[in-house]
Length: 368
Image (cartoon, one colour):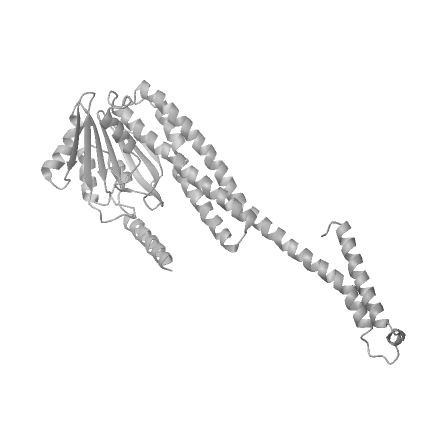
């Protein structure tokens, strides 16, 4: 009951936010997510092949804010990670300071925005859905906007948790080629981390499908139907979040934008292969989730047919026995067999003979 009330409140909030946005000019910065009230925080990784510096900055300190903006002009690679999108004034001020188009700033805080990539003269703006499991093993769908600039990658995300810890470790430990590559390679690495984590989500979906399949075959209870419906909704949501990514990676590969080098495009092809595999797997899981309900209904029908078969056989056996009992239970004055000395035993013998004969008949017909 509480869950239903919470869902109703969330839906009402979404409606009110959309209503607040109606009639506004394009580019109006209105947060459209469900994670309101959190203050924005900023962390910066500034690095090159030889040096690495980490910064935790207070976005509400004017000096720190100016320092954040100054990172876009440094020769080193800067990864600026903004956590918390509900502070609309700060996000708008930050976007304007980085010379982002108002439409990009609007999309950065619109968590219902479909995954997209927009190319501008001085930057590439992208929106993705980052999927991962939290400490309670609950699926988290987090809106994340990634902006590629000349020496800077600006990441705007809703929550502190993400799938980028592997990249942070590679930067800190100078593992791989990330410290010697440009900002476009960092952009690829972030995108690749998001795509790779989709495999983890799909493995979880596959496990759920296998468990439900076994339940459907072994114990097709009414609760299973509800679980199948929830799984179908989950698969459709995941498909909506993931499916467009393949097209976006393809656009990056074909892009002539100077911010993306030819070397990085080679790595993007690997991300393209992963996206293709993910979409094919998603399609299979979608069909499997759809067929689970058909399997459930079919198994329920089969079990019902088994029950009906048993009842029909029992009725078929007792029909002739009931007929005999009915004939000799009539209250006529004269029924010859009633006066036989062993008539009672004859009738019992006849009834047993009919019973055994019918069992043999049903067995030969393989109805039993």
